Structures are given as C-alpha cells and as structure tokens.
Length: 121
Image (cartoon, rainbow, N blue to C red; front, side, top):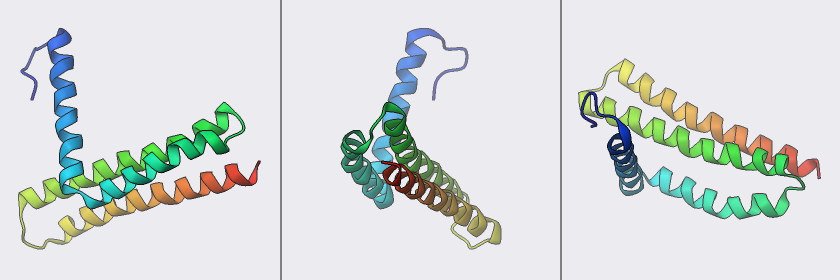
C-alpha cells in the first residue's frame, strides 16, 4: 500500500504495481476471470470486425470489459468474506451471492448489447 502523503510519480508507479499484483492474483486464483478474459481476447477483434461504426465498436467493447471489472469486484468481495471467517453466516452468503449476481447481470447486458448491435447491421 502507498505510504500516507506519498505523491508524484512514485505514487503512480506504486499504484500500477498494486494493480498488476491484483490482476496476477485474479489470473492465478480465479478460473472465472481466466475464462472471461479469454472470451474478451477472442471477442475484442470480433467487435472491430463486426461493427459498422466506431459507436458500435464501443457498444460491443464496453460491456465486455465491464464483465472483467465485475469479476474483479466479485473476487475481491469473496476474498474479504473468506478472510473474515470460514464459518457459514447468512450475511457472508448474501455478500457472495450479490457479487455473483453482479457478474451475471453484466454478462446478460453484454449478450443483449451484442445481440442488438448485430441485429442493427
């Protein structure tokens, strides 16, 4: 974590290093993140090939990358819940379920946007 009061390029470099560690942890420990990243890698060039305008390209890409953001947030929620206790608690279950729902909603949005853009061609 950055030292309190730290500013300038050192803070930016440290922040980038922490972000890289987070992405590495997601890759190493989260199968869903690896699967979704693979889908993003495959679908990104498809978005450029299928879109008929820059607006359509953006509409296809933004929800794809949003899925990765939601998966990272869900993984963070799960890690914190697991860190607190391994005992079952209704609120812990709810937190994990809500994180999972967040990912599912982002996947549904992605599918709907892709369908609508492809039907608009």
